[in-house]
Length: 78
Image 1 (cartoon, one colour):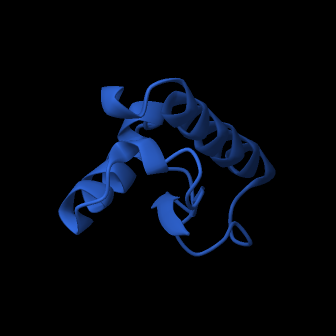
Image 2 (cartoon, rainbow, N blue to C red):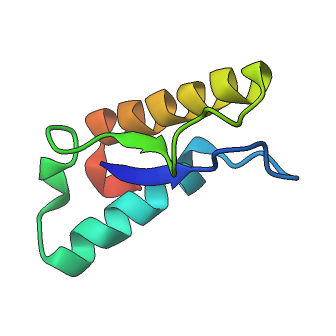
C-alpha cells in the first residue's frame, strides 16, 4: 500500500493524476509492467486520515478511488 494521498487538506487540491503518479513511478523504478497496477496495491492516505477534517477525509477517499479507476481504465496513461 502506497501512501500517496495527503493526510490533511493541502493548500491546493491535487488531481487524481497527481495522486496516481507516485505509484506509477514506483512501479516503473521497480521494473514491473504497469498492467499489474490495477491488481496490485491500492492508493491510501500517507499515514491515515485520523487527523483529517471530515470534508478532507471524503475528498481523500474520492481521490484515491479516482486514481484507482484511472489505473483500471488505462495503466499506461498515468
